[in-house]
Image (cartoon, rainbow, N blue to C red):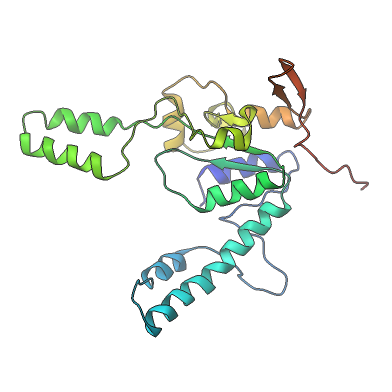
Length: 239
């Protein structure tokens, strides 16, 4: 919440005068104190879930639904209000809220800037090597790999469903924090170590920096050239 990618990207955008809506730091709703705020209470809410039939089970599920409706409501309202959305979608992380927000944004023909980083598991290779003389451990590790989504994706290729949904020009392989660490005095974090170990082909933050000066175009495969991108509808209102 305090040191993750949302916080850094929010700082970066705020430096250019952008109003940032962050699901971890939601704005207060007039007349509805703490409406939709996420925190430790979310885990407590999950603990109440049950598949039990009957009145008690239905009541427990209704409490979960009614309480988390606030979070769903305010997050989707922020998407509704935003001019564009930034999504971080590693292929090894299960998520439902992020795809919902992405789809809502695209239904409104607003841009989604989609960060899909490489997914590697160096510890997995080390563990496999460590267990090479342990047939029982090797078998258990193979079973674990089959049971959980340990699927390396070293090129960061997103689900192909996302490509026509979002448009091919708005995918990024990284944030590019290393280019701006001194400027914003960010402390070292896990994402920095991941990005330091490889060449960044298309980082997000330089794109955002250029966006402050000029709106991006999109590739038209029929004419084989870049053309105006009408998804970028930013109000030009008098102050």
